[in-house]
Image (cartoon, rainbow, N blue to C red; front, side, top):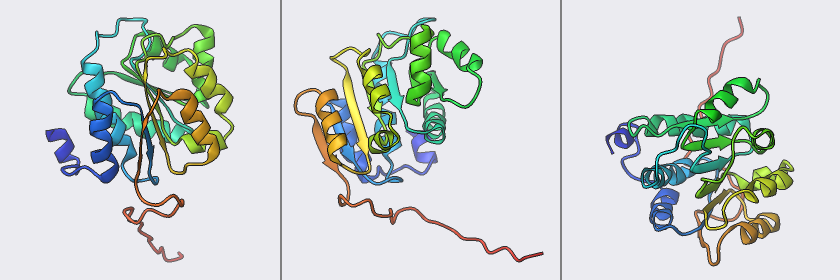
Length: 219
């Protein structure tokens, strides 16, 4: 708790306060909220609790929690938060994404980890090469699901999810709720997932994000 409070999260944001009890009770969740609304901590903190209740991961085993994100930048942001909040509990996480050599990511995966944060394409590469597997995954998070579908990742996502045990817990977060996302939720979630929505269905700018503009005089 001290780490959370020291980071300025003494009071949970709406998406967090509604998500925590649902996720911790083991239910599947569909969360619709704007970008910047605090979705990362909404699934991150329950993931740490979930992992703490599992048998430790051994060297060579795949992760317990898998988080899929659309871009390298978002994956790195999520990984940074997992490292920040999971360090004292000795929970390990690995971030894998394209655009860089595979060797260091491959080494980290083979060493065993509790959490993998990944972009779909690079994860498929490691699954096909046998570097890792998803047999131990009991919690799946799809972050910015609408954006992943807009980027054409649906075939890769379906291929990945097909390798995860059917009794997993599935958590889907999205800024919008189009038909394509609804169809994927029906396919991936167990019967009667709990649906929460923060704000309206329009993709409006989040008023909680403060933006600053600095005017630099021309030299």
